[in-house]
Length: 120
Length: 150
Image (cartoon, one colour):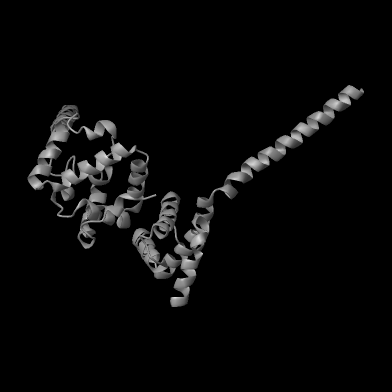
């Protein structure tokens, strides 16, 4: 084999390696970068199902209500969540939803959760 | 047997034709629930009360409307607000007439030429109208903050 051919083989191998890595990243990327999916998965752990997009909306709006002062505290937030999730949700699940929403979409609001926990 | 089948088929086709024609006539005119939901024609709530209720019990619908609203220039926002308050100031007969006017003339509502969905939160969905009017009376009658949603 000539030196030129050797070089070709090395380059082809290198290109193939890069392609494999890029493809791997492309496959792995969306799952890690989409908080809505992580949020849905966490909710499933609490036995909360329903439409992924809808639950994500409710999670984000819950945060917005805390920022805008529409919900003055986490108790009001839990009430909002309970009103707008599927029927039959328990109080415990509403709080689990709220915790997951704050964790995922507005971690700055965590003190609100802590205050509620102390009062309970 | 074949004759009977043909007759039944002909009768079925005729029935479908009549149904289609009837539906066509119904659509060309306003009803007590179309195009504006009955609950909106009859509610004694103010705009602010209705929006506050929608924010609580139809949060995704409200959110989407407000995103759309916030994407409009200030004069269009002002126009939509004014027009909404004007509509809610009408009594049942006035609202019913307005419903008729918009159903029979697509150019009747000038606001819609600037922003097609200007009244979506109020007019477009019977379920939203029903859920919101169910509880709107428990909110303050004057609360302009319902328009601030960023």
